[in-house]
Image (cartoon, rainbow, N blue to C red; front, side, top):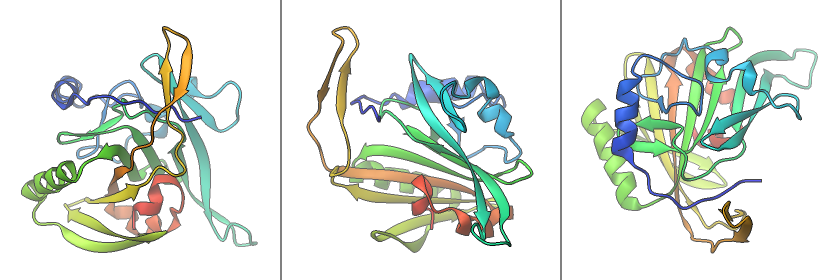
Length: 237
């Protein structure tokens, strides 16, 4: 069940935290992942250590975030999955629960509360997908302007999942960044307000908004993103 909270994001404080941990990648949930400078050689076991494996479900992880946990699914991806030519091409860690108050990753001054990562069979990061919820057009424009100032004017691509949307793309020597926003009318969203002190859970009013999806693609595995079809990655192309 997805817990949904309203919270303010303190980007300045997060930036200080990242600065103090520079060069020291910690497991997801222990410190924000720096999406712009992540080393593609970072191992699965570093980001998703065995100690976080679920005690109740195979191929799931319970990632500690504050006093709570977030559910992560581990899955192998294949080409020709249902034929004799089946071939494993990667491992995906897909986040299945989140809170808007979480800061699992950051890119410049934008924080992200949900994170999914695709690895190659030989344990290299192929792509990262990060989501931020309930953002305004002003926040979106500011993020695009900041990245364009840093990496040059964005290239515009057309993506499609359920409906068409615009993808903004920046390219560096070894990686590609993509960013898209999608309108969410919250028709299929369960929003709950949890009061731990009172021990109560009650539904929250739904508020249509935009969600932002930011992707970091390892150029060495650019062709492999065609095999990513689930979760956050449906908005990568």
